[in-house]
Length: 602
Image 1 (tube, rainbow, N blue to C red):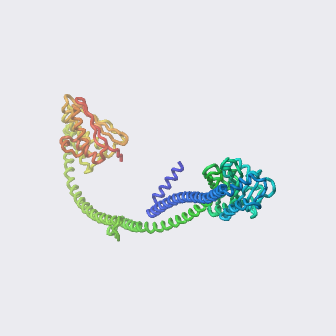
Image 2: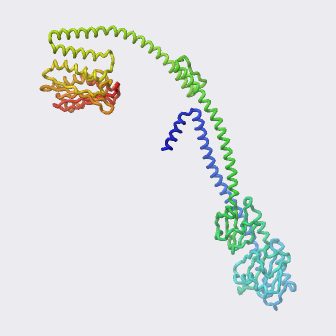
Image 3: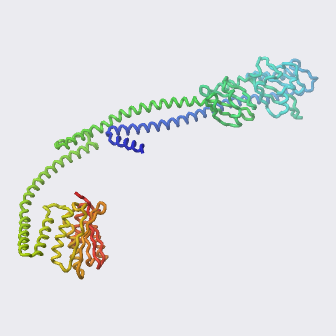
């Protein structure tokens, strides 16, 4: 209830505002909605574009790193295959296996020279190799850069035994800490990545030994650090146990839960230290190692926020510019309208000589031209009305002069009435009195409307005269008029034609004496006058034809000879089509005519 009152007051205040204010408000609202919509849509599209481009960039960078590292992995695997299939290396495995068990043949026989040259060739061509170690099943080994730390057998090493147990697989070992191997180039175990492959006899398929190749981890470091993911995003590599093979120095990597990284490709968003990170991972082919990218989402959001700030600034500037342009635009419309309004006010005060002058032919100029024509026509109409009023006053003087004749008629009738009274002719006195009232009310000093009470008196006088003519044929009664409608203004002479129609077309055609009853009542906002007779009535076809004629104003063919048609037309032309005459009739029973008039009590 209270909200409706406030809303209605706001709407009323808005309606009372000037057109300039309304135009400004409408322009600002339209521009504000347009810019806000464009900004919202633009921000959403830009945010989505940033996310998509970030994901695409991340996938490209991961693919690039994965491709580079995979090339190194394939290259190392190929080197192991070339070394294993080399005849000199195979001769070392076969002959050393049949020797007396010497623990180091690398410095003492021709096998070292031949096999060592093969190893040296690959190490010189591929600087990413930190060392190659060949070990046979007799615990004899050969290497240029790798040596045994202590005299414990290499064949008992975990990497050796695991390679022998899976002779058809290539083993990748990250950070091989704790093995019985040292590097002449002072590479520690956490600085290399080991590739281990078992060597089998081509004839017996027996495992003859194992080849171990250490690749420098700096190769992977270079591949990873060659790409960038924003300001603080990074890429790292994990082995099949989830251990970190290599990662840039970053504390975030140690807070990543391995459960977030599923097999295959996936991308998740997780919170670390109250920051949201998008973590994407992919798996290397033929191994369970994974490449993982970590990207903070607040970096991309920072771009979006910056873009939103610029958008808001543009919106504010646009609105300011729009208000300025709208102000000048509304002034170009309002100023001519205000000028036209000022002239209208002056014309209302009587200065009809003023005219609106417009320098354009737009709608306002056309409106001004129409106003000028209207004022000119008003001047002509005023002059015409003035002339008509002058002629009317002259006509009124003539009417006053002509009123001598009705007064002369009234005086003559009064003289006859007095003479009849002197002679005791009461019936003549009554009929002359009725005729005098009939003339006096009928003339009504030229007025078109009279009180309902006078209209009833008029029809009563008419019936008195008719009673003298049809004394054995007619009787009537006029019901008491309600006090509230006695002074209702009605058109004069509306009942007399209806009563006349009832006498001549109803009672006169009836056998025996007829009766007319006149009723008056107030029905809602209608004054209803009813003329009821027990005459001959009408057949249904005749009644329908009469009703159609009453509903068709201006049909002169059916008005001839029927006074009630004229009454009905006068009422409807004066008060509207919702008023007029309604007829009910039964053949040989009688007719009821109801006259509906507006209630206008004065």
